[in-house]
Length: 279
Length: 328
View 1 (cartoon, each protein chain N blue to C red):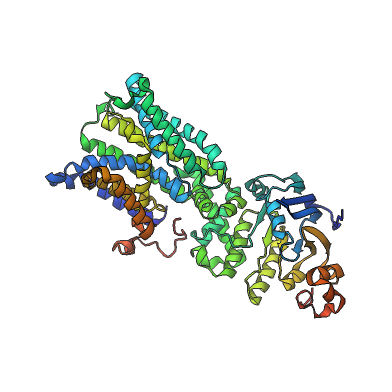
View 2 (tube, each protein chain N blue to C red):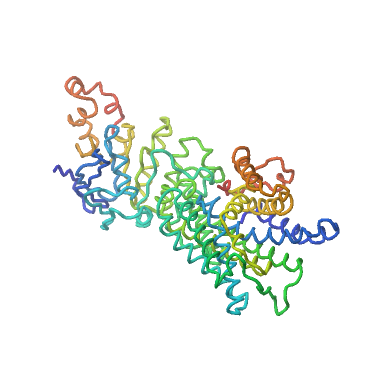
């Protein structure tokens, strides 16, 4: 077992021997890894490496076959997603999964669900406590929209926004749950260079709000720029982990991405991994 | 509740208040008041169904069964146990809610249209019980001599009194449902309908919410059933079969599933269509209903409220500052 574990004081997420199998296909195999609190952790790997499957396991959409997941010291494997969300874990989706027919503001307000309480009776009868809560929900949602830069679009229907803004709105909705750990699944997919730069800056500001970020991303410039640590998955198993510069020069990683020939010839011509401004 | 809804509510209340004077002036349609009492009773049922089907996206084919549970609870408790009708009414709602909970918990924990299947079977079972438990329900020959309602010691006589009682209740239920929709709970229901896995990941216990809205819809159906019982004073299992569940669904669909206003509009319209204008088709009635359903699904899937040419729309349009999305 290759346990590649970064040394850090307080891990917010601990995976131990995590495995998932779909029929005969092994999607994740024996993943043991710890994510320290307060960092930006990236997970990279070729398509089909199991990155999204791993996110689905951590956020509760998929129950792992084997192994354990500890989030904030609680064993959460097998919990329903809404319980995990209430414990302080939120996520975005690779395929945008907004509530398309609700307004931008309402989408973010839905994100405040685990931080509010009013039920059927209180809301139907408009009891005073519910009105106060509704006001608070609205104010918090507005301040989150301002934080991500979508404040002007609060009234627009979410489904009418361009993709770049939809991706940011997903992050805003996730932030509304007040996560301690935020999983971002390919947030830069479909974004142009300028939008991706703004996204990188936003992610760093989120980390500044005492939120740990785990980023699954194919945009290597973004990953190398903002990550504190990178985990490389390859066929559902950790291949390597470390700082961006260590990963960039890791021959195994280059081989996994580009095959034997490339690794032997010239790593310098490998644009995707190498062509970035650096930290 | 947004300004738009308040305005529609005001207009609706005024129109409803004036309606009896209007029809009494025209002798030929004075019996429309009677039809409107039925329409109001069905509205109470369909507000719940609209929440369940249009907003939470769950299909129930047992609304007539819950309607019947309310009706027979009121009928049996008042006839056989001499209960006060006003005490029997909440009993029927609680019983229907309890039964809905028992049916809903297993069916709604599964993803997909399991509620439709479970309620289809459940509705048939309830109908059989109404038919066969002759000792309690009177069976096919019916339950008779059901007392009417009294308000503050005065027996409710005549269609006008019933009309105001029933439609007053509809308005109260409507305000309750509108409040619910424009709140944390309503947003959660719409979120579940639109993107269930995201709703779940945002901390919404989707199964629990579906069960709760199903229970609410059953309780409202039962309330409608109780009014029905005391208004017609006679119960027959035929009013609570699958065909009636489908009729309720059709009423909601014709008006517009994703709007409570649509539910009210569709219910009133289809009650008139069914009671007044489709009688000529007799045995072909089912065919006509099927055609309407098919036509709506093909040409006007969002119901009558989606028609954009209504002239008052400009006045009713949501002000620019509003942040409510389209209701889905």
